[in-house]
Image (cartoon, rainbow, N blue to C red; front, side, top):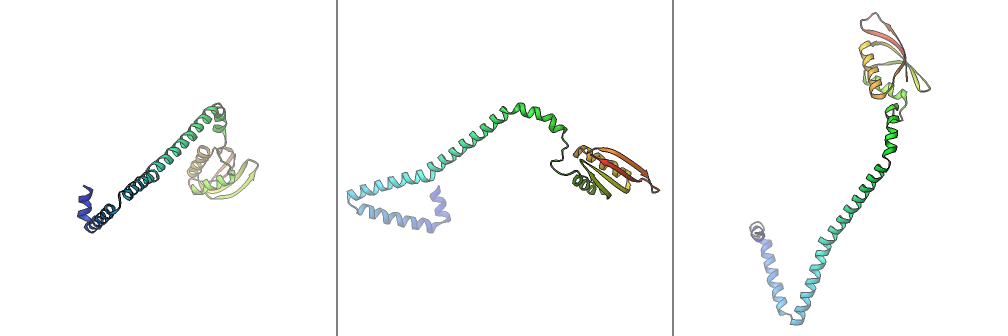
Length: 178
């Protein structure tokens, strides 16, 4: 099958292989019996070397890598199981945390306000809080923004003062977020 494929698509390669085969066979039979015996043993040693180098050794290497990966994963599972009680004890603390992931409250407030299309007139940081002034902001945008801060970032309104404006739906707001 392979010979037919090669002969069909690569006839010149097949012809070269055939000529080399004829040449090497003639050379082999021209050797003495002792030399033929040595050539056979060299061929066997080369075949064993090729099998080892291209088949056995890569398979053994991959098997060793798989074994080491399995052992690392098993060790991770044992570590997780041994620390399960600690994780369960920390879960309420994580759930109650502020969720800021090391970011300052000011950066969170300004970023979320910008994504909601709200321009901060002024802000003043104070400990773990920030006082914010907003002017001519849509009341609906304000409610959406405060809802996003509360749900996604766990930032809550500590104080708020809302003044309605002459324009429909617009307000001036002073609030403290924590």
